[in-house]
Image (cartoon, rainbow, N blue to C red; front, side):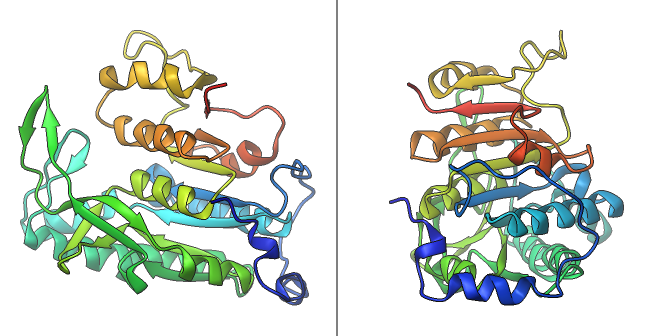
Length: 306
């Protein structure tokens, strides 16, 4: 069900106005959001090179706050792949991926939880809050926000054990929605609990997609380290600017493993009611701001079938 969060609780406009007074720093004129976007939720998956480049992280934080000031309701879901791999290396634990997903043992999961909620989330919350009292961090584990079942991996059509990796089967968005109603910017770590209490590592792209659907978001934005979805990789760097869900579905089986979860997340989102999904180059400063607000978006845009 689509919910316009701006009207979900009495006093939300007053709360936003109070937070805006004296909180805006370093802003510059930006394009006004379209009518479809104003007062709507935008879920942004933050990952890739921008996560390990301090300048890009600061720019990203600025963009998120600017979207808030423009009257949107941004929600951030972050990854942490480079930081997790670095910590696993330091501890002498194996780093392995299958079908684009991290193989997660019980030991690996402990590291994943520590790095995501104890380091990456804290740094991102701090970067956003440098612009005012906006960001609040939480995990998909909190208040049973995300529930997952163990995901079965497949490589070349054959099953492969990827360990404690979860596929989200339910999202309870009330906690995130309450934060939005208070004028905050939720920053969510991609972890989830199973029905039996087991914690799962969830791919951040798929977590962002599931949360966007549950919140009735108008837009899902995926940041990555390439310009968008290439038409014929590795033979060409031509970017597909726009495609429908059906067109993406046909391309999905042949995609490189790194792009597979992102495009799978985009496909799930637009087929479940999200207005559109965008894949943007996170290496470009202000990619989020321009991608969401400009009339012509860079990267690749996925739209529902007509």
